[in-house]
Length: 160
Image (tube, rainbow, N blue to C red; front, side, top):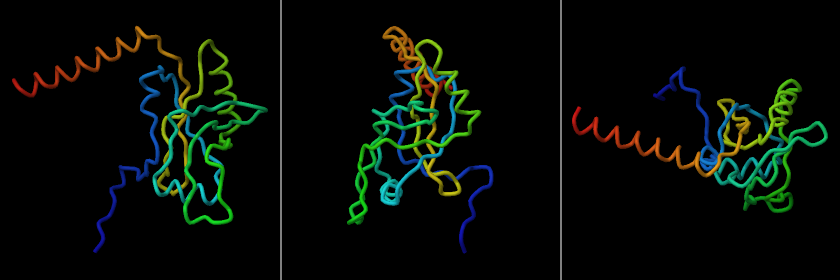
Protein backbone atom coordinates (compact mmCIF):
# COMPACT_ATOMS: atom_id res chain seq x y z
CA UNK A 1 0.00 0.00 0.00
CA UNK A 2 1.37 3.40 -1.01
CA UNK A 3 1.41 6.39 1.32
CA UNK A 4 -0.48 9.32 -0.16
CA UNK A 5 1.00 12.80 -0.32
CA UNK A 6 -0.76 15.46 1.70
CA UNK A 7 -2.90 17.87 -0.31
CA UNK A 8 -1.72 21.03 1.46
CA UNK A 9 1.95 20.53 0.56
CA UNK A 10 2.81 21.14 -3.10
CA UNK A 11 5.30 18.53 -4.30
CA UNK A 12 8.16 20.38 -5.97
CA UNK A 13 11.64 19.09 -6.69
CA UNK A 14 14.26 21.76 -6.09
CA UNK A 15 17.09 21.58 -8.63
CA UNK A 16 19.13 24.71 -7.84
CA UNK A 17 18.84 27.58 -5.39
CA UNK A 18 20.62 30.91 -5.39
CA UNK A 19 21.13 31.51 -1.66
CA UNK A 20 23.64 34.24 -2.37
CA UNK A 21 20.90 36.39 -3.95
CA UNK A 22 19.17 37.07 -0.63
CA UNK A 23 22.53 38.07 0.85
CA UNK A 24 23.48 40.43 -1.98
CA UNK A 25 20.04 41.88 -2.84
CA UNK A 26 16.81 43.14 -1.31
CA UNK A 27 14.13 41.06 -3.08
CA UNK A 28 11.23 43.42 -3.83
CA UNK A 29 8.97 41.05 -5.80
CA UNK A 30 9.02 37.46 -7.10
CA UNK A 31 7.66 35.98 -10.32
CA UNK A 32 7.53 32.42 -11.62
CA UNK A 33 8.64 31.82 -15.22
CA UNK A 34 8.71 28.78 -17.45
CA UNK A 35 11.98 27.94 -19.16
CA UNK A 36 12.58 26.63 -22.70
CA UNK A 37 14.84 23.57 -22.50
CA UNK A 38 16.18 20.88 -24.80
CA UNK A 39 15.68 17.20 -23.99
CA UNK A 40 19.21 16.60 -22.71
CA UNK A 41 18.89 19.67 -20.45
CA UNK A 42 15.73 18.30 -18.85
CA UNK A 43 17.44 14.93 -18.23
CA UNK A 44 20.42 16.70 -16.69
CA UNK A 45 18.13 18.80 -14.46
CA UNK A 46 16.29 15.69 -13.28
CA UNK A 47 19.69 14.44 -12.05
CA UNK A 48 19.73 17.60 -9.90
CA UNK A 49 22.87 19.20 -11.29
CA UNK A 50 22.55 22.87 -12.21
CA UNK A 51 23.85 26.23 -11.01
CA UNK A 52 22.14 29.62 -11.14
CA UNK A 53 24.32 31.54 -8.69
CA UNK A 54 26.23 33.48 -11.37
CA UNK A 55 23.28 33.93 -13.73
CA UNK A 56 20.86 36.77 -14.31
CA UNK A 57 17.77 37.49 -16.38
CA UNK A 58 17.47 40.18 -19.03
CA UNK A 59 14.71 41.62 -21.20
CA UNK A 60 15.94 41.86 -24.79
CA UNK A 61 13.76 42.47 -27.82
CA UNK A 62 10.52 42.08 -25.89
CA UNK A 63 11.56 38.63 -24.60
CA UNK A 64 12.94 37.44 -21.28
CA UNK A 65 16.24 35.50 -21.25
CA UNK A 66 18.24 33.60 -18.65
CA UNK A 67 21.91 34.38 -19.18
CA UNK A 68 24.86 32.36 -17.83
CA UNK A 69 22.79 29.61 -16.21
CA UNK A 70 24.80 26.38 -16.02
CA UNK A 71 23.21 23.01 -16.86
CA UNK A 72 25.89 20.32 -17.28
CA UNK A 73 25.94 18.00 -20.29
CA UNK A 74 23.92 14.80 -19.93
CA UNK A 75 26.33 11.87 -20.19
CA UNK A 76 23.93 9.53 -22.04
CA UNK A 77 23.11 12.13 -24.72
CA UNK A 78 25.43 11.15 -27.55
CA UNK A 79 24.56 13.12 -30.68
CA UNK A 80 22.10 15.72 -29.42
CA UNK A 81 23.92 17.34 -26.51
CA UNK A 82 23.55 20.97 -25.49
CA UNK A 83 25.75 23.98 -24.79
CA UNK A 84 26.11 24.19 -20.99
CA UNK A 85 25.96 27.98 -20.65
CA UNK A 86 23.67 28.90 -23.54
CA UNK A 87 21.05 31.64 -23.26
CA UNK A 88 17.67 30.16 -22.40
CA UNK A 89 14.35 31.79 -23.14
CA UNK A 90 12.02 32.35 -20.19
CA UNK A 91 8.26 32.18 -20.60
CA UNK A 92 6.00 34.72 -18.89
CA UNK A 93 2.68 36.36 -19.74
CA UNK A 94 2.83 39.68 -21.56
CA UNK A 95 1.39 41.51 -18.54
CA UNK A 96 4.06 39.96 -16.29
CA UNK A 97 6.77 41.00 -18.76
CA UNK A 98 5.45 44.57 -18.68
CA UNK A 99 5.50 44.49 -14.86
CA UNK A 100 9.10 43.20 -14.90
CA UNK A 101 10.13 45.83 -17.42
CA UNK A 102 8.60 48.54 -15.25
CA UNK A 103 10.22 47.05 -12.12
CA UNK A 104 13.75 46.98 -13.50
CA UNK A 105 13.31 50.42 -15.06
CA UNK A 106 13.67 51.89 -11.59
CA UNK A 107 17.06 52.87 -10.20
CA UNK A 108 19.34 49.96 -9.30
CA UNK A 109 16.83 47.14 -9.91
CA UNK A 110 17.77 43.84 -11.58
CA UNK A 111 16.29 40.40 -12.27
CA UNK A 112 17.92 37.68 -10.19
CA UNK A 113 17.12 33.94 -10.46
CA UNK A 114 16.25 32.58 -7.01
CA UNK A 115 15.22 28.93 -7.55
CA UNK A 116 15.14 26.43 -10.39
CA UNK A 117 12.70 23.59 -9.75
CA UNK A 118 10.16 21.15 -11.16
CA UNK A 119 6.61 22.00 -10.05
CA UNK A 120 3.98 19.44 -8.99
CA UNK A 121 3.13 18.76 -12.67
CA UNK A 122 6.79 18.00 -13.48
CA UNK A 123 7.37 21.23 -15.47
CA UNK A 124 10.67 23.11 -15.06
CA UNK A 125 10.14 26.58 -13.54
CA UNK A 126 12.44 29.43 -12.55
CA UNK A 127 11.59 31.78 -9.68
CA UNK A 128 12.85 35.28 -10.50
CA UNK A 129 13.23 38.14 -8.05
CA UNK A 130 13.07 41.84 -8.85
CA UNK A 131 15.94 42.93 -6.65
CA UNK A 132 17.81 46.01 -5.51
CA UNK A 133 21.51 45.65 -4.65
CA UNK A 134 22.64 45.88 -1.03
CA UNK A 135 25.49 48.08 0.04
CA UNK A 136 28.17 46.71 2.40
CA UNK A 137 26.54 48.35 5.44
CA UNK A 138 23.20 46.71 4.57
CA UNK A 139 24.88 43.31 4.40
CA UNK A 140 26.43 43.86 7.84
CA UNK A 141 23.04 44.88 9.23
CA UNK A 142 21.41 41.74 7.82
CA UNK A 143 24.17 39.61 9.33
CA UNK A 144 23.70 41.26 12.74
CA UNK A 145 19.95 40.56 12.64
CA UNK A 146 20.53 36.93 11.67
CA UNK A 147 23.10 36.46 14.47
CA UNK A 148 20.75 38.05 17.02
CA UNK A 149 17.90 35.74 15.94
CA UNK A 150 20.20 32.73 16.41
CA UNK A 151 21.36 33.95 19.84
CA UNK A 152 17.77 34.67 20.90
CA UNK A 153 16.71 31.15 19.88
CA UNK A 154 19.60 29.66 21.90
CA UNK A 155 18.66 31.69 25.00
CA UNK A 156 14.99 30.75 24.75
CA UNK A 157 15.89 27.09 24.30
CA UNK A 158 18.25 27.14 27.33
CA UNK A 159 15.90 29.06 29.66
CA UNK A 160 12.47 28.23 28.27
